[in-house]
Image 1: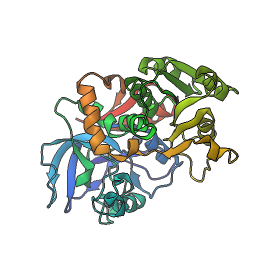
Image 2: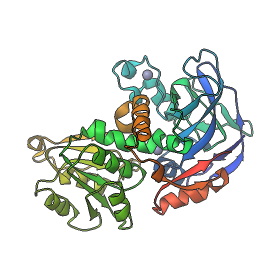
Image 3: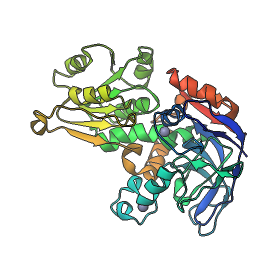
Image 4: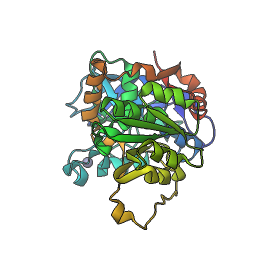
Length: 366
Ligand SMILES: [Zn+2]
Ligand SMILES: [Zn+2]
């Protein structure tokens, strides 16, 4: 099959023939129909996040089950599925404590670029290739753990389903689960990208009284308003924090969702959140980066700083909830689909993301 391979961080992906072995026990072979190009993929390709090499990136995807290994009970050939980039074993320390995205088996496998049993199904020139987050969807097919396959409602198009597989769930859950936004609250969303627009839309759907979009690119202003933002603040302004406070009775916002992973923006997220409020950190920072917040006054601030991964950590449940909101017309996800590419256009799609072009780029397969 054909796949996009990362040999050297900082270089283009190479679209080439690779070998994909049959699914083992508890694994599923999925034909990828659509895969989104996410900032996490870009970070890996550009070398901002360290991974084992060579590797097939891609983690935001939907497709059709082609074949299943033995002992698979969750899906059958022909099923339409969204892939989860945080499959879980269901019985380890963290799974038992209802933290499936912290699953010991998943964290160990994903950290090594392998599947559950510590081996790879992907090979190039007889050498093993690394899987990315147990998905590797920049390829015509993927072998994934059974728990990485989540049933997809019949009327949800594959390209929308792919976005539900990462950006939508991450932004939606950051607001609804991790911030716990209630009607009448205020919120700032830093970074109006693939995740940020979903945080804005979820805040609007949840009845936020004020939604302040913060971005260094003023071209994102109309995009933010389209999704339901009530204000826009240029992140490059010296007084960006004061502007956010001024827009919210001088106190600051009830919640801030930080989507950029930029340490300065993360500190500002803390500052623009009012005492008693919640700061939700979604953006992935560069290797070795440190978050700095004032120690003085921290206890009295009663602020909560929450690490948010995959929208609060119940992707299977959220895929279904989000699909239902989409099908009822409450979440308008079609408009998030930006430019469509074939696999050979993957490097153009990554550059488009890097340039801050609006809309999610989608790689489509026949
Ligand atoms: Zn992603
Ligand atoms: Zn587990």
